[in-house]
Image 1 (spheres, rainbow, N blue to C red):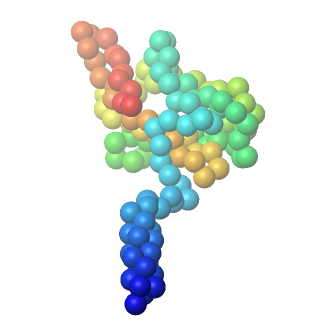
Image 2: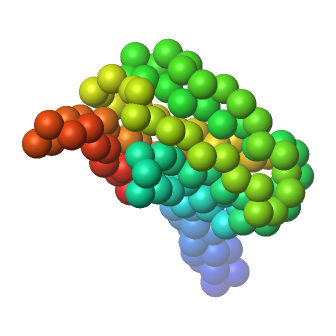
Length: 125
């Protein structure tokens, strides 16, 4: 009887741990990464930079708020490679920059607007 109670308690502890654990999907979306950095530049540009060698080329997408693809391009997988996107020609609104490297997805939200007669942008963290 004592063994049965111990086994039942062990089963309950293990099953609770399984349900409490969060599953990691294949393509986890992140806002930061060790492999890819997306950051704003002072000259109205957004830089996508590889911090370390990636297993494959990095795919970069820029989408508008209606999920229309405005830009699609690749960055070779060597550390230090970067691409700067001049976003001054974008209309006022919300945009998403996505960098896909292997199974890792990094997304940044950008809001383009006019303030005091000058076009500017805000990058959400």
